[in-house]
Structure formats: C-alpha cells, structure tokens
Length: 307
Image (cartoon, rainbow, N blue to C red; front, side, top):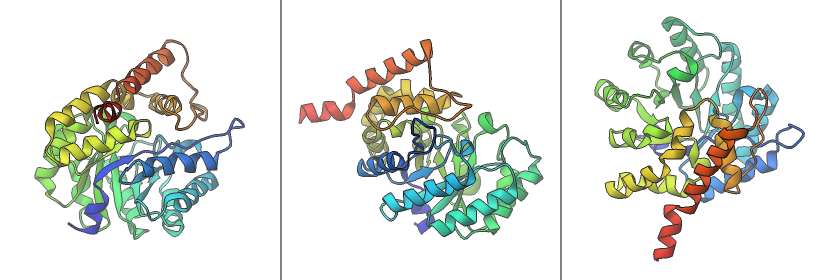
C-alpha cells in the first residue's frame, strides 16, 4: 500500500467551522470540535468542505482555519483542505497557501457557480494539481455542483501523479464498481454520500468522507471498522440505526442539520453564515426528533450497558 493510498482510508468527517454570536469565526470552538473528533478515533479531517462553509468565508478566514487545525491536531491525523473557489487562479493560490500552512492533502472541487465544459473541468483540475505537490482527491457531486467528473475527465488526468483519489458523492452505488473496474488501484475511491456509505464500503471504497460523523463519531468509526473486520451484521445494525440521520447529508440544508445535530450532542453550536440560516419550524422539530432518537439508542451506549 502506498502512502497516498493509506491516506484515504477509514472515516474522515467534514468538520464544521464554528461561529461566535457576532458572526466571526470562533477559532477556539472550531479547534475544540476538531480535537474532539480526533480524540474519538476518526482517521482524518476534511477542513473547509461543504460542512466547513468554505464558500461563506473570506480568503484570510480560510487560511486562519487551516492554521488553527494544524496547530490543534496537526500530526495526529491527516488534514485535508477543501479547495472550492470561483476561479482557477484563486484555487491555485489557495492550494499553494494550504501546502505552506502544513495540511497533508487537498480535496478539489470544480470551480463554483460556472458549469464547465469537460475540457474546462480537466484544465481546472490539471492547473491546480500542477501547482502543488500535495496529494489530491477530486470531489464528484453532480447533484450539488451540476457537473459530473466523468471517465473521460479522469482518463485525461491519470498522468498526474498527485491526483490520487476521488470522493464519490453521486447517488448511484454502481459508480464504485465501475470506477474500480476501470482504474483498478490508480485512484482510491472514497464514499462521499452518507446514505450510501455502507454500499460504497461493501463495493470497495477505501474509506468514508462523512457529514454526520461530526455528531456521532464513535458509531461512524465502528461502522468502518466492522466492515474492515468482515462483521457485516454489526455494520448493518449500525447503518440501520444511523440511516434517518444519514439521509440529511443528501439534502440542501445538510449544513444546518449537521450543526443542529452537533449542538444536541454537545459538540458545537448551530450558528451558520448567511445565506444559510438555522432550521426553524417543522423541519427543525423533525431533525431534533431524529437526533434525539438516535442519541437514546446509540449502539455505543448499549455496548457499555452490556459490558
């Protein structure tokens, strides 16, 4: 197993960015969230992904969050910085700064807002990869970003040695098998959509980039471990317990829902930056009920009670 393959195993929560009442980043709270996840056994952290509200932060704020994470947990687990910018030039500058700050890898998204032609998508990824020595995971999420990283694009990027992984968030588990059949071990494939995570792992995904792990890390770590150990009944039991919440990861209000779940579990606050706003009304009540039900029936609590 190569070093870059080892990087993309286990469970990587998409860590949230915490805000003060004023709307400024609460760096201490953000570091506490990161440290708690590492203490609970996650394999690595995704910084400034969707749940980290990357596109709601100013450039200097993004750099500050990365520096804070390196300070808080650097060296304990791999840190992967999301690269989500409006232009290729800004993405290159951010990738270089992330490397200088000391993160271990990058998760690169298509340029925001603009829907590229295939040759533009390929050129965007190629330019970023050529500007940094860090290993890169491409993020494929057609429902969210309106562009699919198809096989022609991956074929065109296969000569770049630091593009080593794909976070697969298309809501079709057939993609895992097709990717592995086509590329073998050329690209590690990470399950990227919470409510098809187990399907992805069973079909050969090397690990899981997760949203709801931020609220329930112990069960998430155990789910991946049970798969690795071939304990399928245990894995299915955890997955079925978790599924009502895992569905939240596929909704447009996933950030608010995950932050609300974190708050209920004592791991942060539900403050978000506009245009996002905290959940209200029936939706808020629905999410609270699901989180509280999962909290009452946590497999980790049952295991302790049975011990």
